[in-house]
Amino acid sequence: MSAIPLSAQDYRRGVVLVVLGSACASWLGIGVRMVESASAWQILVYRSLALAIFLTAFLAIRHQGRLPSAFRGAGLAAFSGGLGLAAAFSGIILAIDNASVANAMFVLAVAPFVAAVLGRVILGERVRNATWAAIACAFAGVAVMVAEGVVLGFLWGNVAALVAALGYATFVVSLRRGRLTDMLPLGVIAGVLGVVIATTVCALSGQGLLVSAHDLIWSLAMGVFQLGLALILITSGSRSVPAADMSLFGMIEVVLAPFWVWLFLGETAGLLTLAGGALLLAAIAGDALTGMRAHRLAAARPGG
Image 1 (cartoon, rainbow, N blue to C red):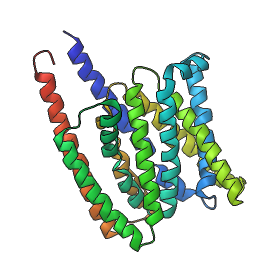
Image 2 (cartoon, rainbow, N blue to C red):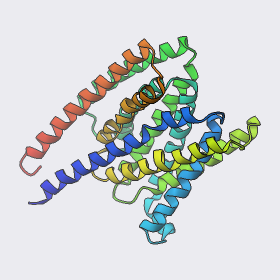
Image 3 (cartoon, rainbow, N blue to C red):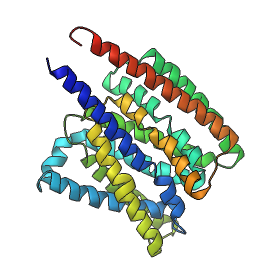
Image 4 (cartoon, rainbow, N blue to C red):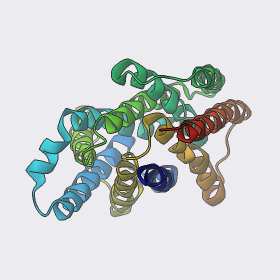
């Protein structure tokens, strides 16, 4: 009889962890803006490198040095999640480098709804009618913001943010698929892939890997604190929070990222970006509220 209260307690704990992890992730905009001269791909090289090293060390401590078994236990879900996360890394860095932080973050907010579709197709999870309505509302908001992006020269930034949204949704669904195991190895996989991809781009484009000490410190710090700590919290929370809920609560990042750059750097967003963002956040809030109501009703049923 105590399983139901424990499940509710685990759910609340998971939500707190996901929200805290997303709050850590929301500092990406500040980190990128603090970099003086390094390109987006150079930032990605060192951020991904720091992430891979930090999470490998963390996993070695958590699993008492048994790293091979940790990666085997995570399985193919960790690899698919790592691929998705690497795509999200690349996309969001490029988006912020080619658009305002608000523009990039609000477009990224479509990820929960992409996750709902992927969860239905890949995992067979039922999508509520309210979620489909929210999907339509979210895409309307994205359309408004992309239209402004074309006018302001932010087209490629918006495209990159949409790629990041698809990658993030893949990451969330992979976490859901492997929720019974430690999925943190996917962060290491994503970090290694990020290093390989970004290093290749830097080499082919002639950018090289040499950056200033200032830019190196900020890039490494983003890998450890903004991303590494966020992944530890989010993967822990994912064990007790369903994919749709997790991605929705994760959109705290969308609200906080523009707020930080406005508060500390004075960067503002355009009118259409704010309008489209308001539409997106309304969709997220509406879906979250109806989802919590459905969760309470299900828990109140006999045997639920």
